[in-house]
Length: 91
Image (cartoon, rainbow, N blue to C red):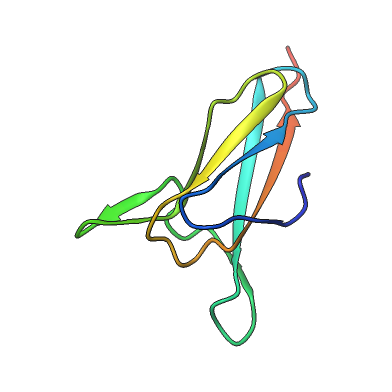
């Protein structure tokens, strides 16, 4: 669990993957500070392009030791991100 981590527009953040495997379940949630009270969401999870605006946040480059997330250039909803990773046991 990464806890809440600030992320700016067009920024990438590399989080550790403590499971030492890519056989995992990744859960990513966002939080915005744009309203009267911050709210937790998954708006534009995976990234979105609408009328030239690049919004949302997505994860990529999962390795045995890290995972990278990127906030899109025009995004206004992902002020913070939280990544939770669970190792999937082998049968």
